[in-house]
Image (tube, rainbow, N blue to C red; front, top):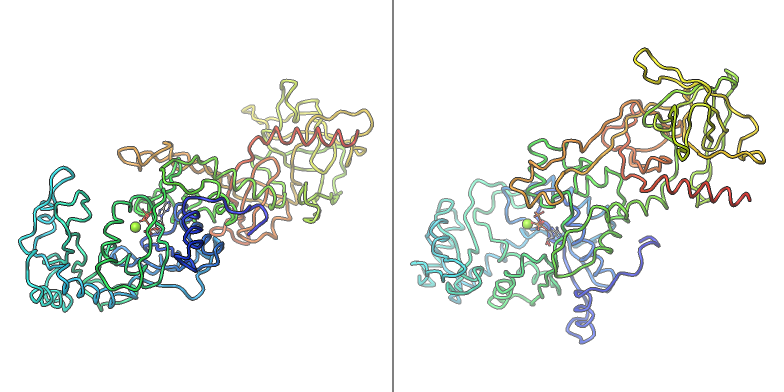
Length: 567
Ligand code: ATP
Ligand code: MG
């Protein structure tokens, strides 16, 4: 963990754990992260990973990675692998404790038999619709299934034959026998097992044609692994009585405690694998790792660092109340991290050619540029300077108010790490568009202003013959609505301008040596990462990770500081 990550803040879950250690209820803590492999992990999962693995780290305990793979028709091995990769990337490790709920299918089956033998479960022949109708409503009690009072022997016979594959999908289910009048709907004889033929499970193949339900599988898996604290999101609060009932009515080795915390919700995006799957399947994005996606794969490709994501989890904290987090919180985490760690470079996004007429044609100078303004350890690099350079279109105006601190006709500006230039002439095409500037440079201005000279602005640039062409992708929020989930159909809220591709950008030549995944601050433009998907030797593609907030204010401040330092 980096220095920026302070000691973790306490929260109600940590308080419970500390109390359990203090009173001797537990002498070691065991948590788990239990994703269902039906999609890629998203930023919401990061909160759960950070919480579960972080607690294990801080209290000298263990955290298991367990795939909740009881719904095999929506799962696949691609997701299993991607999830492991993402957890590792975030900086966590499960050592040899990688488990699958399907590892326990045989044991779960035995516990189901135990429930039947003790009169706590029965085979029910009602159809799914009938079960729903019998369940009642929040205001009306349910009705008991006509199959509820089957004998233990009959239940054992039918359940054994369910497993043997004698019945079709939906013909029968195994249900817990709890209380059809319970005010908690989850306790009204919930289904424990259903029949699913024709599935090739990614772990167990065709061995099983009955599959246990989550509410039965989860507590038993937790208990079999000796989990002490089973942390889950608030929507499982109403399931806790069932979690406890399963543990109380089976001979499992221990009784983990389920504790619920609030989900992470993030503005301008969706965090649900089902919805993210839809974005991918319907082609609204270019895949799970599209840099606009709130998936860990997408954030990684966008240039986010694991440290920034962990810092984000720390900042939003763990509570019991649902809330909506602003995207700005996530963005400020990555800005802070990259401000510290990303080397600086120069890139011109909207190039405008500048010819420096008094600079010799063949001459090239290597100017020294610092890789980081506050970290000398990051060293310097050489940036070639020549008679023809590119600057950004936004850094020139023919006429501008006095407070405009860039280049204007007849005015002067400093080139970052270089000379002061003056614009002498503006060249336009026949539509009136500016195509080139003719400038002159002052050879006495390299590094410092001569006495008494006032140059008000500093702009970035690249040498035209040396620069590398690059494609730069600028991203905006994926949705135009802050809470797309709250609308009729979140897909209709997609922001049509979430991606801008600039194909004619120029970056300084040192960037040709960068590796995909390397991150930079392009001075005055923001933070960028060399794309891991589409970059080739010949074709550099950068993704903008984040903009520089208040870039102007900061640069002006820097200039003032530099001036002050020079006295
Ligand atoms: P999704 O709706 O995206 O599929 P899920 O809860 O069904 O989410 P799981 O794979 O079952 O996804 O989740 C694994 C763990 O991650 C669970 O413990 C779950 O509570 C937690 N988790 C999922 N989404 C969030 C979120 N938005 N915030 C915090 N924790 C989350
Ligand atoms: Mg789920």
